Image (cartoon, rainbow, N blue to C red; front, side, top):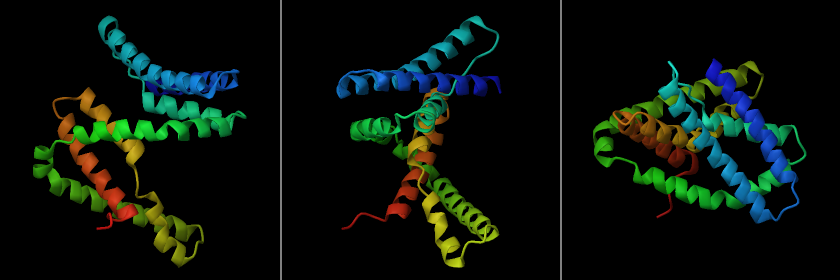
Length: 203
């Protein structure tokens, strides 16, 4: 609970930092660079805190960089007038970030592990899809939505690539003994989700 509270507090401070950066009278490229450095700094800070606490304290303090960044952007988007500028900046740099991120993710996919664990990935995929369908259908019915809406609404919840891939990569780094196998299964499930949500590529 303490780690969660610290992550939320750090996210709030990051949100204020983002607002300060966006309020500066600087060129767009400079603001973009400062935002990227702020996000990268969160991961560096979290890792340094974890290492320092492991070395000098009787316990290990682990902050969640993804949660911190999500809260920071949430604060900026909903509690400031910089929402439009933040979204425009993020959309501008997103392609380059996605290319690097998904390339790194694909390179870390262990095909030998996938060859052995694909039945598990397939089972998780169908279990997740069934649970999403049941949850969306039941909740929609309780809310009084039409049958035609409830029959289709579950499809909006299939994709999960962003945070899921980030967590999978983090597990690989944090737990090298079994993290690679676990991440490979999760990535395989995510790929299946993407194919079902968007459809297979045209031949």
